[in-house]
Image (cartoon, rainbow, N blue to C red):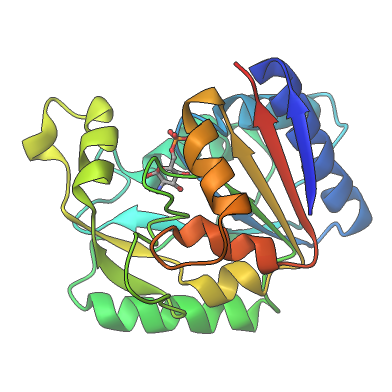
Length: 235
Ligand code: GLP
């Protein structure tokens, strides 16, 4: 594990964008696993800048996102699909058929979860998975539990997560209670993991990294990965 500590969000975003850009230049048809939330926003804007300056080419890149709220799709402004198009996909030269996000609007969620794992396997797995970390130690929406769930699955969001994500909604009642999340397997089978965390996540990040692997802090599982970079920002 490589743990890098930086002093500003700008430095964290710049480093993360460089690591992602390197992956894309080394493998132009790479599969990038992407995350949502505030933490990756600046990294995405730097990737958009690099793309507009022709310093990175997304034309052969495929993407798979970690998660999506059940019941939400692009037309819902708080959906993760909308977040990704607004913050990245609408500003880079990626082909829309290469963008994959769990579909929260389908009737059969269990089938969608199965199909998502099948899709990731058909792509040959994820080359680089970008991760944030939830206040409760979740990765994607793998919430604290008594066991790790390895397949992509429907999850009931932890109250800590509902509260944390309510900042994007009018109030907590409007936050969906269920989501689809990539399970632990597609994440841990990625060629490389890149986790970003700000000062607000210091305690849970230290717990995940140094207190042992436990499903009660799902992010702790990444410490078993052979190619993990964590960028922690003191801001
Ligand atoms: C969200 C996402 C996670 C994200 C986490 C932290 O709910 N499901 O993928 O890493 O919460 O978000 P933020 O970076 O805004 O703190």
